[in-house]
Image (cartoon, rainbow, N blue to C red; front, side, top):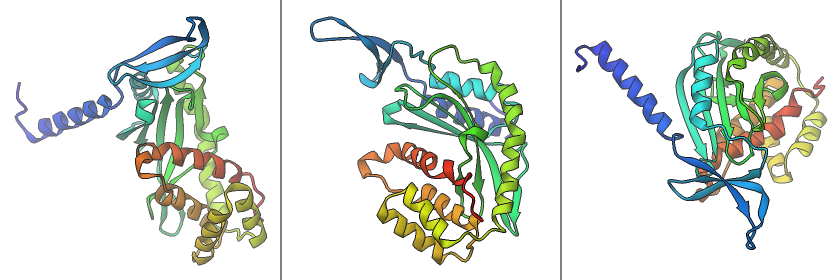
Length: 275
């Protein structure tokens, strides 16, 4: 039956948009046991994308493949929170998948005057062992649309590709992590009241990034009107979200580059004594 009113047309359009999004990840993949030129079986297998004949990864024999589409559908079915505005990103010819959502049931937080943070969730999976399978709670600073990384110990719920993915355990894991997740906003508010000594900022950057980037980030921090730890954090988040550079031919993999940078620089940031 044809849609006969505006509401039905809007609903139809939303469903079609979501289905088109899933097409990005709904491609055929097979596991193939590898062998040497002499025909001897190797202790590894390849993950083959059969519609392009590209090998997406070489993994161990204990690797159990979980389809990208199954991860997305499992998360959307089992997370006990509304998930909106799905945005799927695939990298490395489809080997890696991220699916980001807004979570409107988690109230926005005002960190300081007019500085609002909105929460979200990002599912992930890989066919090459580079990422585990699961999801992480995330946040976004509305002032400049920067993505805020939260440490794995607080926000990441994942498992190795070595057994059955217990999708139904997602609900209980999500509920257990939520109190820790929300405490992060309290930490951000504390950071607004701390101005770190310059030597600690330099010390942190020296350990976290290369010399050239140290200078650029230090320059941006010194030019920022906010010299608090929150201000420093947002200089780094802005770089990670908006300024990270990749080679033009590698633009497809930018989300992986960002993700690896976030892990490298922000995991330790939360545990520095900035006072």
